[in-house]
Length: 167
Image (cartoon, rainbow, N blue to C red):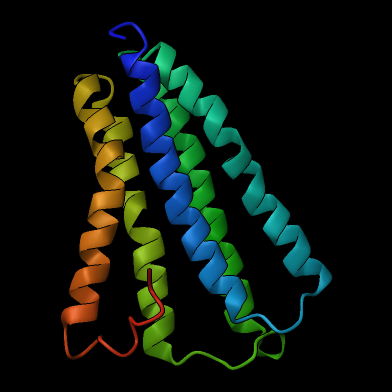
């Protein structure tokens, strides 16, 4: 079991992150009434790096102390995050595709919660060269930080109503 621990940890981290992305993706598409060709292509572009998460996770599991493995993992997660944000921006700029247009605060909260991991991913990739275990810990912290951020937004009276659809 000790030998497979790094692979197991990498897959658990990846499962939690993909779950986080799936919940965001599901929330975005729950608001979609009509899908045009651009939405299909943007969705496929989003799914490409999502489909690479198991590969990046396997590399990370086999070489958890190698900065290159941590960088590959980070680049895949950055690509997923950026493409999710691009898809959300596209949908918000094409209100005819949606059941109803979200207000400005809801769109800001979605973008903040979707984009916040980017900062942590960049930091994790940066420290990977010197402190690989800290890089791995930062990747592992994202689902927890996401949960804390959503909880804070839902408990703040100024953002409570707008944060209801965040999961």
